[in-house]
Length: 298
Image (cartoon, rainbow, N blue to C red; front, side, top):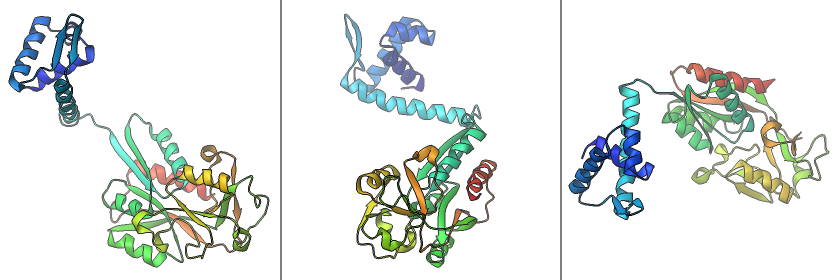
């Protein structure tokens, strides 16, 4: 069994006929048929069933070609990278659930060009942001630090061989939909919020106060609902007149104009920053992303 035989069989499957595959491969139909017969004899199964109307995949052939396609694809990747030296640079970011960080990622793609890089973005829990940067799944991890969580978070970051770099400081805001009964207030207190459900991002098995994405994480909320993604959180805001606490940096371009941020009376100062591998310089594309993040400090 050779790679060429696998490619021939895949071409027949993709074209639905031996004749069509032969034309695509620029070989004779008899040569292609002979190669297929040799392959089927070697592996002991019929890959295709021959009928008066043409050929169809057998169940065994379908399973075989599924494996064969993976082999061919992997070989293609190896050939591009190590023979043709043609591989895209990679850039990925992990972040807590920040719309502005997603928008900065979009701006970075537009600046750098999507054809040159293979991009990836992960909006996830605090612990996973740190783990992704530690394992180099992501070059940069965006999160916040405050007076409350600084000591614990700094210890976790350092123990994982990372460092935290400050970007900007901001106050605490109440984030809610524009139809909320408190939406017209200039400032909102925790007492004002008492009748309404508070929303928080679930941190999975790491639901520590120090790893929470929301400020005032130790506050005794009478009504607390956890969600795992931003879209669900926004739906709950509308459906339940719920709210969450945030940095006040919102992106209407992505979230729409149906939501607003109002200053919290009991504000907690927080620092938005990013974690990176300690002692390793940020890549040029990483610097573009950081520059885009700093735009939101204005």
